[in-house]
Length: 103
Image 1 (spheres, one colour):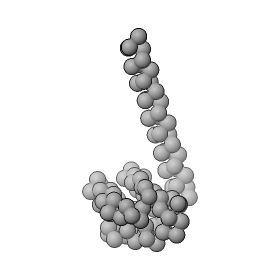
Image 2 (cartoon, one colour):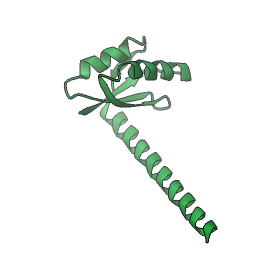
Image 3 (cartoon, rainbow, N blue to C red):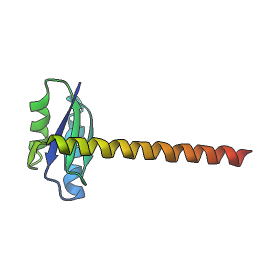
Image 4 (cartoon, one colour):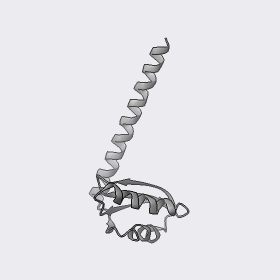
Protein backbone atom coordinates (compact mmCIF):
# COMPACT_ATOMS: atom_id res chain seq x y z
CA UNK A 1 0.00 0.00 0.00
CA UNK A 2 1.07 3.54 -0.72
CA UNK A 3 -0.42 6.94 0.09
CA UNK A 4 -0.80 9.34 -2.82
CA UNK A 5 -1.28 13.06 -2.19
CA UNK A 6 -3.17 15.30 -4.59
CA UNK A 7 -3.93 19.01 -4.68
CA UNK A 8 -7.59 19.24 -5.75
CA UNK A 9 -9.50 22.41 -6.65
CA UNK A 10 -12.16 22.36 -3.92
CA UNK A 11 -13.90 25.53 -2.80
CA UNK A 12 -16.88 24.30 -0.78
CA UNK A 13 -18.39 21.40 1.10
CA UNK A 14 -20.10 20.21 -2.06
CA UNK A 15 -16.73 19.89 -3.76
CA UNK A 16 -15.26 17.83 -0.93
CA UNK A 17 -18.41 15.67 -0.78
CA UNK A 18 -18.10 14.95 -4.51
CA UNK A 19 -14.53 13.75 -3.93
CA UNK A 20 -15.53 11.66 -0.90
CA UNK A 21 -18.46 10.10 -2.78
CA UNK A 22 -16.26 9.19 -5.76
CA UNK A 23 -13.70 7.54 -3.49
CA UNK A 24 -16.40 5.72 -1.48
CA UNK A 25 -17.83 4.30 -4.72
CA UNK A 26 -14.39 2.90 -5.52
CA UNK A 27 -13.67 1.24 -2.15
CA UNK A 28 -12.52 -1.86 -4.03
CA UNK A 29 -9.60 0.20 -5.39
CA UNK A 30 -9.02 2.50 -2.40
CA UNK A 31 -7.89 1.33 1.04
CA UNK A 32 -8.55 4.64 2.84
CA UNK A 33 -8.61 8.37 2.21
CA UNK A 34 -8.64 11.80 3.85
CA UNK A 35 -10.12 14.87 2.20
CA UNK A 36 -9.11 18.29 3.55
CA UNK A 37 -11.17 21.12 2.11
CA UNK A 38 -9.12 23.64 4.12
CA UNK A 39 -5.81 22.44 2.66
CA UNK A 40 -7.30 21.34 -0.68
CA UNK A 41 -5.40 18.08 -0.23
CA UNK A 42 -6.70 14.56 -0.83
CA UNK A 43 -4.61 11.72 0.62
CA UNK A 44 -5.49 8.29 -0.76
CA UNK A 45 -4.01 4.99 0.35
CA UNK A 46 -4.20 2.37 -2.38
CA UNK A 47 -2.08 -0.30 -4.03
CA UNK A 48 1.50 0.69 -4.86
CA UNK A 49 0.74 0.67 -8.59
CA UNK A 50 -2.69 2.34 -8.44
CA UNK A 51 -1.62 5.99 -8.89
CA UNK A 52 -3.28 6.34 -12.31
CA UNK A 53 -6.48 4.68 -11.08
CA UNK A 54 -6.72 7.02 -8.09
CA UNK A 55 -5.95 10.11 -10.17
CA UNK A 56 -8.60 9.05 -12.69
CA UNK A 57 -11.22 8.70 -9.93
CA UNK A 58 -10.45 12.23 -8.73
CA UNK A 59 -10.30 13.74 -12.21
CA UNK A 60 -13.69 12.25 -13.15
CA UNK A 61 -15.28 14.46 -10.48
CA UNK A 62 -14.52 17.43 -12.73
CA UNK A 63 -12.17 18.98 -10.19
CA UNK A 64 -8.71 20.06 -11.32
CA UNK A 65 -6.32 17.53 -9.80
CA UNK A 66 -2.53 17.63 -9.63
CA UNK A 67 0.17 16.03 -7.53
CA UNK A 68 0.66 17.84 -4.23
CA UNK A 69 4.06 19.47 -3.78
CA UNK A 70 6.38 18.07 -1.11
CA UNK A 71 5.97 21.11 1.16
CA UNK A 72 2.17 20.83 0.89
CA UNK A 73 2.36 17.15 1.81
CA UNK A 74 4.61 17.84 4.80
CA UNK A 75 2.34 20.64 6.06
CA UNK A 76 -0.72 18.42 5.64
CA UNK A 77 0.87 15.49 7.50
CA UNK A 78 2.06 17.79 10.29
CA UNK A 79 -1.43 19.26 10.67
CA UNK A 80 -2.99 15.78 10.72
CA UNK A 81 -0.58 14.58 13.42
CA UNK A 82 -1.26 17.67 15.54
CA UNK A 83 -5.02 17.07 15.26
CA UNK A 84 -4.60 13.40 16.23
CA UNK A 85 -2.45 14.35 19.24
CA UNK A 86 -4.99 16.95 20.36
CA UNK A 87 -7.82 14.42 20.06
CA UNK A 88 -5.82 11.87 22.09
CA UNK A 89 -5.12 14.47 24.80
CA UNK A 90 -8.80 15.45 24.95
CA UNK A 91 -9.85 11.81 25.21
CA UNK A 92 -7.34 11.19 28.01
CA UNK A 93 -8.62 14.26 29.88
CA UNK A 94 -12.23 13.08 29.50
CA UNK A 95 -11.34 9.61 30.77
CA UNK A 96 -9.48 11.07 33.74
CA UNK A 97 -12.43 13.33 34.57
CA UNK A 98 -14.81 10.35 34.36
CA UNK A 99 -12.57 8.31 36.69
CA UNK A 100 -12.37 11.16 39.20
CA UNK A 101 -16.15 11.57 39.08
CA UNK A 102 -16.62 7.90 39.94
CA UNK A 103 -14.39 8.17 43.01
